Image (cartoon, rainbow, N blue to C red; front, side):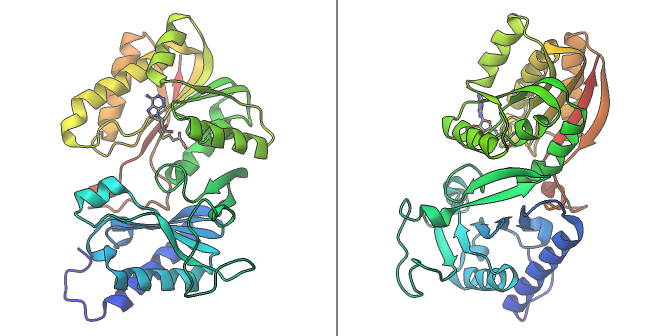
Length: 345
Ligand code: SAH
């Protein structure tokens, strides 16, 4: 739903909503040139996601109404005027497009600023990989630098929703840290500021390669391990390996309500292993991005793991998604990310 009343001029309305979304970020988002500019229902533009990565914008369309060419033109033109970006990309989520009965489509370039070596308007754009120079940029958050590859990676590239949680976690962590499900190193790179040794674990080799490039960019030495997190945590905890800080940021285990019991078992297992491996006075950062797992359910699960591992947990922070992913009261679907920062004794 875009309006409870008939809309006379949809172009006008969409442009106003984009402008309002931009103004909201100008007011509430700081310390970064990468953030979500439009968050679908959270900005009253259902099915439209726009992320900014420095001089690039990445757009994702997830509903029939937003998928029309006319709507895409309006959105692109408004974004162009507001940001004067170097490139605007569309990233396609094939799974959602299928669910929403949208026609198949490839990820690609919607707009590129005219520059040396760039095709002139009206000419077809070369397709990646020849387009590599135009598909990469660098952004920063909380003073940490990241490379961005518009057509690689998961989601729209980085997990911008965790931005403030990285900084929060980094305040408490020290000593030896383990970042489990590290992707391109978001938590690990932030923890490296205060931790003597940081290890990142992920099952995706491309993600770890990007993580290593990010580490080099920030002149950090981080150990990256390609492994299944469940196997690694089991082996390490059985071997008596200990850490001062552990981050758990798994992918959404509950993609639908049906998956809830299995998902909760997954979270319990991870948290139990992590709790066994934490030294006294350790820090556990336990996240869930499953909408179907509520804050209370995650807390209950971690509490059950604490009982099983005979640990005492104090809640330092009970956090959610960053403010560029607005959580609208009355639209519960706009709230999905949980990030618990816990003291473990
Ligand atoms: N913490 C990251 C985001 C994690 S997204 C950040 O802040 O940027 C979830 C990650 O889990 C993905 O990178 C995915 O490759 C990885 N993953 C999924 N299943 C896994 C498994 N069984 N073992 C290890 N990593 C896994």
